[in-house]
Length: 336
Length: 169
Image (cartoon, rainbow over all chains, first blue to last red; front, top):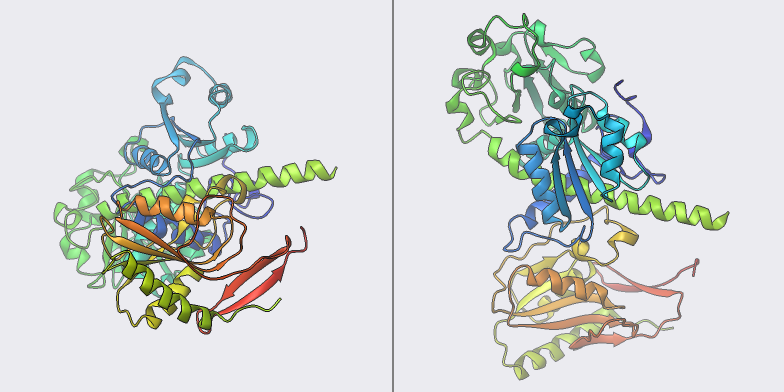
């Protein structure tokens, strides 16, 4: 499976509105801002007595997770339920594909269940894109993380966290620290920050965990964490993805913590009001110290709450874009 | 068609609303405006009533019945009710009442916040085109428009009513 072409308009309908949500690459700033604004409105719904709006009533959202996940899967489920959709979750990693079924066959079977949207997580880069290309029209595909490629809802929930706690992106210094090489979160974050006008995006990692071609993201690369963290407003820590490492990239976890782990001393190098983000699950004592993970400046639990609102925004916006496209197609048919 | 002046209508509506609340024995109502025109009208009414009560703001985008046709409005803003509505008497305020569907959506949304004791509906204009059994308690003016005509409230300062003609109808 090849990773998708970055600027492909597949995820937009004829009016330029979202119909799938596959990657942040190529999406204009106005659309990212619209997602954040819509999510802000949904955050308010989460604070009510009845945490539910009837927007997607009668629609079916199917979570298809070819790879394990707890946070993303449950927050997508909650998001769909708060929009009044019906939700089914399939852990395909433990079902048919392990019995030899191809991705296309799995997909056809899921289509036959008449779902309106699929949230897909897959270990292969480009899987969500592949499905969006082959699924029947009017079914929305949301990327819940594909290989090393993208995790666009995580990227947007990080942006919502930053906007709500730090304000204007154009004034911020943001550091992304850790296992950049294996991180789809890092990629989505770099693209989102650049699109939203962040002037100083710093990527901090040992050379062995830095991918090639980082220049295209317009970031400043540091291998010295103490240098990179100086004066930053936001620190995004990444999980060390032990399950994706094939040996030799790191001497040991202890060594990684000593050189790159976020301790209180290192946090003190950042701006005094700097906030700390982490996509979870956190490895305490590997990439982040417990005292930092639990301190008042840690946004880790806020991120989970904001994640539900972002996912509600993306689910409703893509469904809205699909509805619009369906009407445009019907009008085209009529005028023929 | 001559269009009414909102300022004149609001003076009369404030008087009527006071009388209505008095008749209904409602002493301490909570005011809620529907985003955006309803909020403008509500603020003007509160000023006219010399009332300092905080105004609740409802954005009914998530409750509309035309999502499958019109989709989500791109500039949706959060609803904001700075008070508990449980057992409270509410005054719900909108600018233009046409089909009644916005009010239906607003009532549904309100009930997700709690169970109000009563809801009094106030509209600046009634276009006499209701599709649902929803009737305002206080109305500024009733207009009967041609099928291809719509009215739009501009504001907030000053409030003005504009007549629009739709081409594609």
